[in-house]
Image (tube, rainbow, N blue to C red; front, side, top):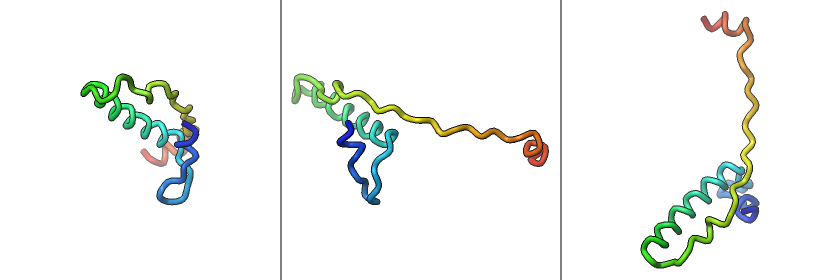
Length: 70
């Protein structure tokens, strides 16, 4: 999976873990369909673990910011 993650996208930047996981999901779906049609005996993408996705830190509004919005 790191080979996918380290690949540079069309804009010359490395893929995020989230984007690499999305690509893996699509690949799994395509290969699952190939298994259902009998083109493959098993889906090799099922053996690949997803990458950890770091969540963006949450920065909630302060009390004063909420008062300003209301």
